[in-house]
Length: 217
Image 1: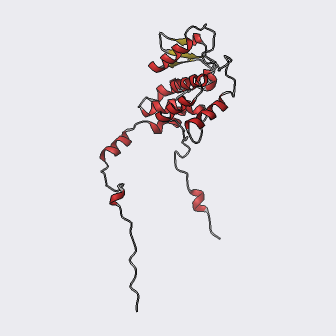
Image 2: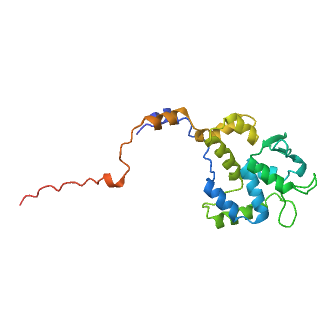
Image 3: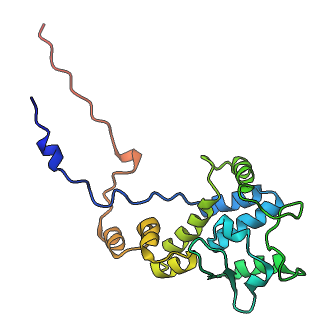
C-alpha cells in the first residue's frame, strides 16, 4: 500500500491566501460611468473618487463636505468611527456640484425620484450599467472601492496612506488586497536588467517537426 507520509509533511506555499482583487481599468471606469443613468452615475463617480462603501456614500450629508479642506467626513463607517476622506480636484468638483444649493442635512446622493438609496437599491442599477458598458463578468458596487485602492497602490501611494483613505484599522488588510500592485524594487530591478531574448515575436519562432525515420524497403 502506498504511503502518503510525504504529502502530509508538505507545507503549502506562503502567500497563496493572498486576496484576488477585481478592479476596473481607466477605460472600464469611463465606460461604466457613461452607461449609468444620471442619479446612479453620481453615486458611481463618488465611489470611484473616494473609495467609500455604498453604505457610507448613501448616508453622507451636505454638511459632511468641507469645500475649504477638500474632504468629506464619513460619520457612519464600518469601523464604527468617523474618518475624513481626501478628495482630489476632480472629487472636489463632483461634491461641490452635488451640494450646491442644498441644505446641510440633505443627503448628497439621492435617487432619480429624490428618495434616499436603500440597502440593495444599487444591485439592479449596477448590473444594468455593466451590461451596457460590456463589462464581463459584471462587477459589484464594492469593486469601485477596490478600484480606488488599486489605483492608488499602482501609483506608489504608501500602504499606510491607502489604509487611512479607505478606513482600514491598520495596514494588514490594505497590504493583503493591494501590496502586490505597488511598484517594488524587486520588480523594477528585474525589468531593468533582464535582457530581451527575442522569443515573443511570432515571426522568429518556428515549430519543431519530427523527422520521419527512413523506412526499409
